[in-house]
Length: 180
Image (tube, rainbow, N blue to C red):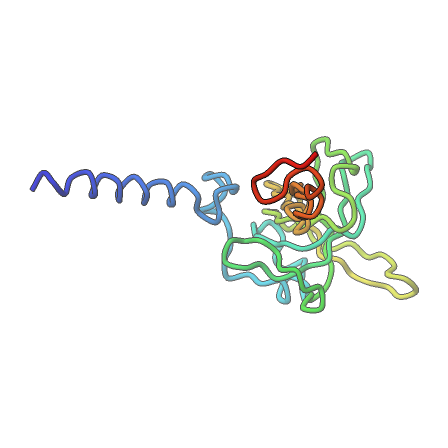
Protein backbone atom coordinates (compact mmCIF):
# COMPACT_ATOMS: atom_id res chain seq x y z
CA UNK A 1 0.00 0.00 0.00
CA UNK A 2 2.74 2.47 0.91
CA UNK A 3 4.88 1.41 -2.05
CA UNK A 4 2.44 3.11 -4.44
CA UNK A 5 2.26 6.45 -2.57
CA UNK A 6 5.30 8.05 -4.30
CA UNK A 7 3.78 7.22 -7.69
CA UNK A 8 0.40 8.59 -6.65
CA UNK A 9 1.99 11.73 -5.23
CA UNK A 10 4.03 12.24 -8.40
CA UNK A 11 0.93 11.79 -10.54
CA UNK A 12 -1.03 14.31 -8.48
CA UNK A 13 1.84 16.80 -8.60
CA UNK A 14 2.08 16.42 -12.38
CA UNK A 15 -1.68 16.92 -12.76
CA UNK A 16 -1.52 20.06 -10.62
CA UNK A 17 1.33 21.44 -12.74
CA UNK A 18 -0.56 20.75 -15.96
CA UNK A 19 -3.68 22.39 -14.57
CA UNK A 20 -1.62 25.47 -13.76
CA UNK A 21 -0.43 25.56 -17.38
CA UNK A 22 -3.95 25.64 -18.75
CA UNK A 23 -4.58 27.26 -22.11
CA UNK A 24 -6.27 30.32 -20.64
CA UNK A 25 -3.64 30.90 -17.95
CA UNK A 26 -3.07 34.46 -19.16
CA UNK A 27 -6.75 35.42 -18.73
CA UNK A 28 -7.40 36.86 -15.25
CA UNK A 29 -9.83 34.79 -13.20
CA UNK A 30 -12.05 37.85 -12.72
CA UNK A 31 -12.63 38.00 -16.49
CA UNK A 32 -13.03 34.30 -17.26
CA UNK A 33 -16.60 34.10 -15.97
CA UNK A 34 -17.64 37.21 -17.94
CA UNK A 35 -16.44 36.03 -21.37
CA UNK A 36 -19.21 35.29 -23.87
CA UNK A 37 -17.96 32.05 -25.44
CA UNK A 38 -20.95 31.82 -27.81
CA UNK A 39 -20.07 35.09 -29.59
CA UNK A 40 -18.01 34.51 -32.74
CA UNK A 41 -16.04 36.94 -34.85
CA UNK A 42 -18.36 36.65 -37.90
CA UNK A 43 -21.33 37.58 -35.66
CA UNK A 44 -19.38 40.51 -34.23
CA UNK A 45 -18.28 41.66 -37.67
CA UNK A 46 -21.86 41.49 -38.97
CA UNK A 47 -23.35 43.64 -36.21
CA UNK A 48 -20.82 45.12 -33.74
CA UNK A 49 -23.26 47.63 -32.23
CA UNK A 50 -25.64 44.91 -31.04
CA UNK A 51 -22.90 43.24 -28.97
CA UNK A 52 -21.71 46.41 -27.21
CA UNK A 53 -20.53 45.73 -23.66
CA UNK A 54 -19.94 41.99 -24.15
CA UNK A 55 -16.57 40.43 -23.38
CA UNK A 56 -14.97 38.05 -25.88
CA UNK A 57 -11.62 36.51 -26.84
CA UNK A 58 -10.16 37.38 -30.23
CA UNK A 59 -6.78 36.82 -31.78
CA UNK A 60 -4.75 37.52 -34.84
CA UNK A 61 -1.79 39.32 -36.30
CA UNK A 62 -0.96 42.99 -35.77
CA UNK A 63 -1.17 45.03 -38.97
CA UNK A 64 -0.42 48.41 -37.38
CA UNK A 65 -0.26 50.10 -34.00
CA UNK A 66 -0.54 53.81 -33.32
CA UNK A 67 -0.36 55.81 -30.12
CA UNK A 68 -3.31 58.24 -29.73
CA UNK A 69 -4.43 60.59 -26.93
CA UNK A 70 -6.99 58.08 -25.63
CA UNK A 71 -4.67 55.05 -25.87
CA UNK A 72 -2.96 52.76 -28.33
CA UNK A 73 -4.99 51.74 -31.40
CA UNK A 74 -4.06 48.34 -32.83
CA UNK A 75 -5.37 47.14 -36.17
CA UNK A 76 -5.50 43.33 -36.11
CA UNK A 77 -6.06 40.80 -38.87
CA UNK A 78 -8.36 38.31 -37.14
CA UNK A 79 -7.12 34.71 -37.25
CA UNK A 80 -9.09 31.90 -35.56
CA UNK A 81 -7.69 30.69 -32.25
CA UNK A 82 -6.60 27.12 -31.53
CA UNK A 83 -7.38 25.19 -28.34
CA UNK A 84 -4.67 27.09 -26.44
CA UNK A 85 -6.23 30.42 -27.51
CA UNK A 86 -3.26 31.11 -29.77
CA UNK A 87 -3.86 32.43 -33.32
CA UNK A 88 -2.84 30.08 -36.09
CA UNK A 89 -0.14 30.81 -38.64
CA UNK A 90 -2.33 30.70 -41.76
CA UNK A 91 -3.44 34.24 -42.64
CA UNK A 92 -5.73 32.98 -45.43
CA UNK A 93 -8.31 31.74 -42.89
CA UNK A 94 -8.87 35.28 -41.60
CA UNK A 95 -12.47 36.47 -41.48
CA UNK A 96 -11.72 40.18 -41.34
CA UNK A 97 -10.07 42.86 -39.24
CA UNK A 98 -10.79 44.50 -35.93
CA UNK A 99 -9.54 47.42 -33.88
CA UNK A 100 -8.29 46.85 -30.34
CA UNK A 101 -7.70 49.88 -28.09
CA UNK A 102 -5.46 49.77 -25.01
CA UNK A 103 -6.35 52.72 -22.77
CA UNK A 104 -3.28 52.29 -20.56
CA UNK A 105 0.13 53.13 -22.00
CA UNK A 106 1.32 50.59 -24.56
CA UNK A 107 4.31 51.44 -26.71
CA UNK A 108 3.54 50.56 -30.35
CA UNK A 109 7.18 49.51 -30.78
CA UNK A 110 6.51 46.52 -28.53
CA UNK A 111 3.92 45.13 -30.95
CA UNK A 112 5.30 45.64 -34.46
CA UNK A 113 3.42 44.43 -37.55
CA UNK A 114 3.43 40.64 -37.72
CA UNK A 115 3.13 40.18 -33.95
CA UNK A 116 0.59 37.52 -33.03
CA UNK A 117 -1.64 38.26 -30.06
CA UNK A 118 -4.75 37.21 -28.17
CA UNK A 119 -7.07 39.85 -26.76
CA UNK A 120 -9.78 39.65 -24.13
CA UNK A 121 -11.81 42.69 -25.00
CA UNK A 122 -15.06 44.46 -24.35
CA UNK A 123 -16.99 45.34 -27.50
CA UNK A 124 -17.26 49.12 -27.86
CA UNK A 125 -19.00 49.23 -31.23
CA UNK A 126 -17.65 49.90 -34.69
CA UNK A 127 -15.11 52.20 -36.33
CA UNK A 128 -15.64 53.27 -39.94
CA UNK A 129 -12.38 53.86 -41.80
CA UNK A 130 -10.74 53.34 -45.15
CA UNK A 131 -9.16 50.04 -46.12
CA UNK A 132 -7.08 50.98 -49.15
CA UNK A 133 -9.68 52.69 -51.36
CA UNK A 134 -12.87 51.26 -49.88
CA UNK A 135 -14.90 52.00 -46.77
CA UNK A 136 -14.59 49.33 -44.09
CA UNK A 137 -16.36 48.88 -40.76
CA UNK A 138 -14.02 47.55 -38.09
CA UNK A 139 -15.48 45.98 -34.95
CA UNK A 140 -13.82 47.71 -32.00
CA UNK A 141 -12.89 46.28 -28.60
CA UNK A 142 -11.31 47.78 -25.51
CA UNK A 143 -8.48 45.54 -24.31
CA UNK A 144 -8.99 44.06 -20.85
CA UNK A 145 -6.20 41.46 -21.15
CA UNK A 146 -3.52 41.07 -23.80
CA UNK A 147 -1.21 38.14 -24.57
CA UNK A 148 1.61 38.64 -27.06
CA UNK A 149 2.85 35.34 -28.48
CA UNK A 150 6.49 34.73 -29.40
CA UNK A 151 7.29 34.78 -33.08
CA UNK A 152 7.26 31.19 -34.43
CA UNK A 153 10.79 31.60 -35.79
CA UNK A 154 12.19 32.84 -32.47
CA UNK A 155 13.18 29.31 -31.48
CA UNK A 156 15.04 28.68 -34.74
CA UNK A 157 17.74 31.17 -33.73
CA UNK A 158 19.10 29.05 -30.93
CA UNK A 159 22.83 28.81 -31.65
CA UNK A 160 24.35 25.46 -32.36
CA UNK A 161 27.98 24.61 -32.00
CA UNK A 162 29.98 23.89 -35.11
CA UNK A 163 32.26 20.93 -35.01
CA UNK A 164 34.76 20.86 -37.85
CA UNK A 165 34.99 17.73 -39.96
CA UNK A 166 37.48 15.08 -38.82
CA UNK A 167 39.81 15.95 -41.67
CA UNK A 168 40.41 19.33 -40.01
CA UNK A 169 42.37 17.61 -37.23
CA UNK A 170 44.16 15.18 -39.55
CA UNK A 171 47.63 16.78 -39.70
CA UNK A 172 47.88 16.78 -35.90
CA UNK A 173 45.93 13.77 -34.74
CA UNK A 174 45.62 10.60 -36.73
CA UNK A 175 43.89 7.50 -35.33
CA UNK A 176 45.09 8.03 -31.78
CA UNK A 177 48.62 9.00 -32.71
CA UNK A 178 50.01 12.51 -32.68
CA UNK A 179 51.79 13.42 -35.91
CA UNK A 180 54.54 15.94 -36.08
